[in-house]
Image: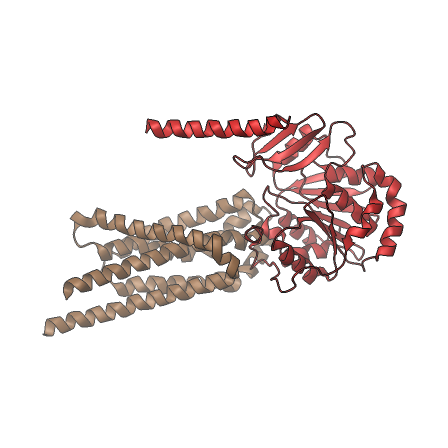
Length: 213
Length: 302
């Protein structure tokens, strides 16, 4: 019973990592689309977006690793997803208004796009970045296997990123509007978070049942 | 590892070789290469003309702009002549915005026709300007200036400054097609803000594929009736959108007769053009228009 629960948890954590990897790159790709009407598609607009994503992911990794030190749980893991889902809302709801305002204030499209990318993408991406190191902690049973576990996790989440990039650039933009895609991403993150929190409860209930039996 | 490296080297060599070869077969010499942040630029020359093209790896890119070595005032491409024929719709532009410089062909033609007109060209790629100046005798003057930057950003800022242009020409190609953010309803609305009551927008597009429908619908949504100019000898389609009511065929023919002599200088007979200027809705109006939210233009173009 305990063994199958552990493998169930692992499957869940890996699936969630896949989802977050997928969504990170999907949002990054849409970022170019979102900024183009205000800052164009010059090479520095992509430069701004990629810089902000890399920076926020790096800080997310740092923070996620730190948070995994104390009482790591699927519940907290799930809360990252829900937080990321909520942090996507400003981008969907106020993105245009914000760009409109900043377009007036900052004349140079290099710094304009850098500031806007930071304001729109930094927080959700940083929170999504927290997921990877935290997942490693949830998966690792002993230090001997930690490299293997981290490797598997990076494999899954980066595969998600690759597919997220491909799906978004080849198909999603052909079928949907940018905001429709973002809203869907937000909803998926939200339910992924709920699933993790719910599983946490079930597993705890299961453990309690075993202990009392 | 060595095997891998040598096969890569061989592949690169073959690529360059094949590329050179296919140009050489047609008697085309490469006379200059300009590195660019966007698409590297090649200047080629054969016995009659010099051309600017963007290189797309192995493929010999399409010519973006060409100039005859003798009679350089004569326009090489049908699309450039088609653009000029929009003078039949609105005939005296004094302030002109051209998005996309290329070899500077259009600005040269317009400044020849209207020496007092002020022409501003928005060009994203500084390397294109360098090549135009060095190889296509393009010159910035008191009347002609180039703004290096994205066309969309230029239009937005110009609208904020309250500027107006009698004529806006979209001639922005990146080697594949028009950048997607220069094809949306929102962008056309922004251009509309620049147009005075007799203003006109002339857009150089292609007449192929599903994009034809989406593009037409987009222009139609913003401007209402538009003129579609398509001719047999080219895949280009010129869209003419005006803030005024569009002239009918009778008027266009009459104006063509007046303009004929002046435009002969560019190697064209403008009286041939009115019959190809259609105001008919010949596209599928169910096709979704392009917006900032939905603009998979280059996917539709395939």
